[in-house]
Image 1: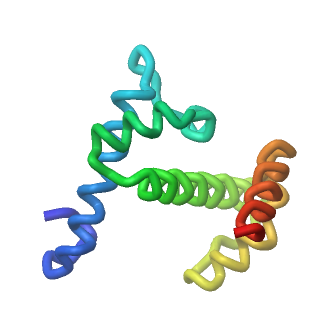
Image 2 (image 1 turned 120 degrees about the vertical axis):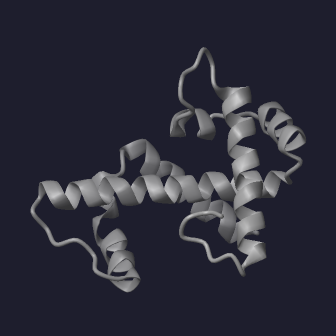
Length: 128
């Protein structure tokens, strides 16, 4: 049983197991000398490393990309929450409030490099 996940939702449990396999494989392949695998390392991963993770975890590269995007979003959300606490601003009370907060405060926590990366990603998505 996984805490916070209803036992009747087998698809959700299976999805979490697949994500855990991807994470475990990434740690094994990318983790050097017991170091943690940080966001910079995940973003700097080349195709060969991603393929090794895909083969080891038996996951599609698109699933690996989706997991990295989710990790990036959660990382940014945590930075925004820390920023709001430091500024004595109210924290979100529901999902809609959290979305508004992310839209209004994201520019306060992103580095210039991250902003450029997000702009490039938007442009790439617009081309598809």
